[in-house]
Length: 479
Image 1 (cartoon, one colour):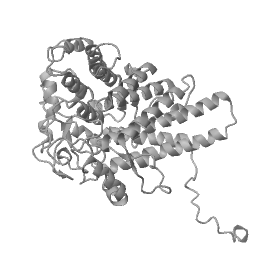
Image 2 (cartoon, rainbow, N blue to C red):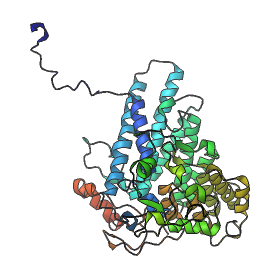
Image 3 (cartoon, one colour):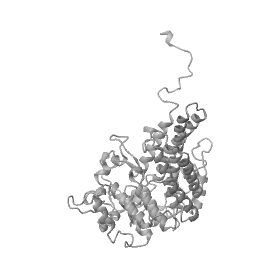
Image 4 (spheres, rainbow, N blue to C red):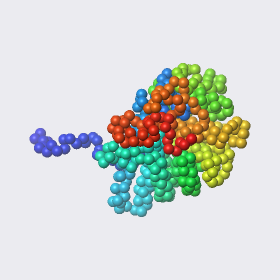
């Protein structure tokens, strides 16, 4: 008994059940998973982009469809998820990897793997910061993620951040050794395939270049052509998906929100369903259930008002599968971007029509539409590029909006860039910093926590916009 005692009490405050060190692969996987969950989730506490794109609407509680951002502190959660759960873990993973590189004694082949891991962290860090810029505008960047050194980080200029992210993506794409491995199974998207990560980085460069074109056409053209030359995602096999597991907490968040919750909070919005009905779009049974059941007809809930769940089509069962993949980038989206590039005067090759047709085809193939139905759809006068209604912005905007179904954030971004489809705010909306909300939000308001804890820097960023209102435009949203 006496032999078991000690006078040394210095270790009593150490929690032996909680590790003080970890592997960078664990941090990478955690950040990648959190990043995908945030863009995939439909929980109104975290992600209301499907509602803002008017692809879905709500039933009993329509506040978020009426643009109530503050009731559930949605901007705070979106901000915290990316900064705390995603970017911070990526930063820590990179720091450990850089330490390993500085003290590396292994083979040249192993060093390539280590360097590839660092480049992939850089790629997903750029993706995450890009989402934050596209959501809020100016954000903390150069002083971010340093709570001790910069507890109140300044907000950097959004356009400057964009260009720096494109530079980092370029460096990462060029730096990747595509013949070497990286994270292996710890990478939930590409399984460590560095060639696919290079295409992902280049595709992000292309997308960001198209976003910025209305602001700086010469720069956008240079960057888009450089990204295309380096190699972008061109087929569905290279699209960026994360395959979820059958059981929680690793199931698709849609399953959690739509099935496991035992709630009936969402139905397809009439805005989208009516458009697809007009076009007799063959993706309808892939997206929605029919209503009445067995009728082959589809009915969307009225956007932004109370809806009775049983009176409308529902979200298709495919999206309710716990293993249904989350998605970051698809080949269909790339072809729409290339169609835009042609119309914007960027010499990417091909015609706007050919890229437009490829985009629709890839989307339909991705959803399992029969080849004959795809062919028939493309020649409809209401769909065919030469005869469909409106300007190129309307044609591309409306079809990309449909193809970006279940991609709420990118559907909302495409709408803001092209101003199509025409989306109208519901009759009843919540006020924001500017008073009554009369249009579909163009941005999230800055989080309440920033207004309290980082007041001076928040105030400067809001003043630059003109206010913290949701009608203020992101820097690239010029028209």
